[in-house]
Structures are given as C-alpha cells and as structure tokens.
Image (cartoon, rainbow, N blue to C red; front, side):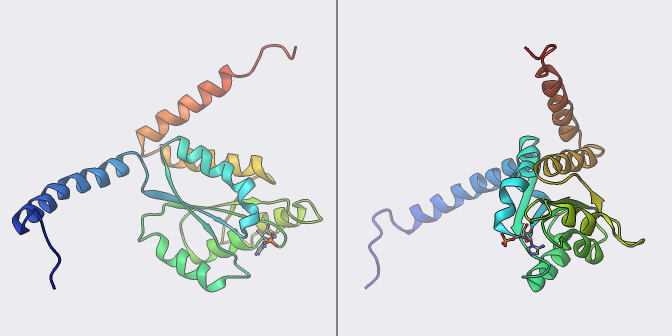
Length: 193
Ligand code: AIR
C-alpha cells in the first residue's frame, strides 16, 4: 500500500524546488568561508593529533579548509598512494605531513606529488624526534621537503607557512595572516613581571 501524503504530490514537489536554491546557497557560503579543503594535513598515527592539531587550528582560524587524515607510509601504503594521487584533482594545493620515528611520510608524499610538501618531525620516540627530524629533512636532491621544527611548534609553523604560501594569491588569507601577526605582537608584554 502506498504511503499517505497529506500535502499532496504537488506540494511535495514545490517544497523540493524551494529547497534547491537554499542548498546551493549553503554550498556557496561554505566555499566562501574557506571550508573547501586546500591543505591536506596527514599524520602517521592518531597519536600524532595532539601535535598536528596546531597546524589545523592556525589554518582554520584563517578560513583555510583542511582535509585531515591518518595515513602511514609504512602501515597504510595503499591508502597513502590513493589519497596523494587523487589530492590535486580534489582541490588540494599543498601537504603538511607529520610523523614520528622513521618518519618517511613527508618524503614519500613528495615522491608521489609535485605539490609542495611541508614536513613536521614528531617527538613520539625514545629519540625525542631526532630520528624523525633526520628522516624528514635529509631528502636526496630532486625531491624536496620543507622541514619544520620538532613537535607542536613545528606543526604550528607549518600551518603558518602554508597560510603564507596561499596568501600570495588569496587576499583574504593575507588579511588573516596580517591580523594574526598583529595580535601576536600585541600579546607580548614589555616586561616579564
Ligand atoms: N609512524 C606510523 N607509521 C609510520 C610512522 N613513522 C609513526 C607515527 C607516530 C609513531 O609512529 O607518526 O608518531 C607512533 O605511532 P603509534 O601509532 O604507535 O602511536
């Protein structure tokens, strides 16, 4: 037995037609707010999130959308290859990759894509990130990874650097970056007491 439709078919059709422009507007607004992901933030493990969150926080604060993923070059190589090869077509302009231990995530990402790769070595091992730093920074000539400091401050700076790269062609990001610097400067006290 067909379901009862108290409004009648015409009323339902009219409602659907009315919803369409609203949905379009919502999609437009979310794009205007920078929600469409332009930066892919990859990390080797869920355990890296407390550090990598700093990069995402900076970028989201500037209206830059991020696609945040747990992808390990070692533990999930197929997921890694699939995501990185499809990223540019999906609108990603650059990568931020954070990993600890033998951190090959940034290097292997850079091997697959010509997009800029910013690497963040994380201090999750007994070597406090020295292993990840060397693995990330010591790339062979021809496959560059822009490497940042170890840990959360490195992730924060990678986010800021990514914003600076996007700011060259995006006045709204430039404005947000200028405001960030201004606020930061104003927050520094003249004396320590
Ligand atoms: N890692 C995961 N796959 C490859 C690497 N290098 C790193 C993660 C994390 C560390 O191994 O980036 O920093 C420990 O991960 P877990 O999952 O054991 O906590």
